[in-house]
Amino acid sequence: MDKEKIAVLVREFLTALGEDPDREGLQETPQRVARMCEELFRGIGYTNREIAEKYAKTFQDEDECVNREGGYVVVSDIPMFSFCEHHIMLMYNMRVSVIYKPKDRVIGLSKIARIAEMVGHRLQLQERIGADIAEIMQMATGSEDVGVVVEGEHGCMTARGIRKPGARMRTSVFRGLFERDAAARQEAMWLLCGKPSGE
Image (cartoon, helix red, strand yellow):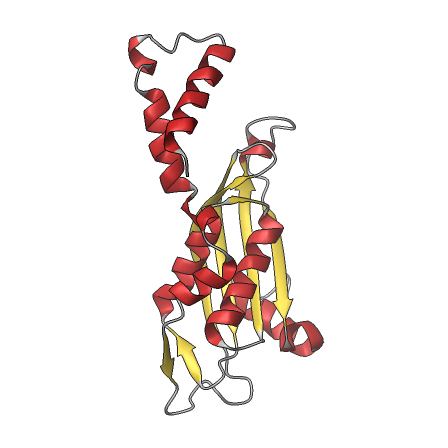
């Protein structure tokens, strides 16, 4: 990431807005924004495969406690945020829930949250966030059977445009067994999101 160029462009951006980049409150803003970009968009520097390799710490399922028929691992409500690639607006109050069926080994619990976080630190679409997490989970665990549900609010809908605060978007991605088998997918949705209202 070229932080020096980012700082130059931020200064030009401030000028284009009609601001004075030399006034006291803005003098260090270009450098601050450049450092912020390095932190917030660090996921851009990694491919999905590199993220999978980085967080592919798994453990042998010696007791086969989750490697049986119907044995799933679910991690729900992982908090995260990202930035919409269309307006570079914040996607916030996001929650990611992941389900997978282990094949002999289970991934370290914190690694699932780290995968979600790294995927979020890119310019993104919510639909792609789920697809990226699912792909990385498949590579990191060796299991084809993965599902991801992402829910969140989008600044480009709540702070601009239609301006509807509180509107939430939910997307889902299913691979392997959950994609092929309607009953498994229904069970996965129940585990990831809880019973639908009215049941």
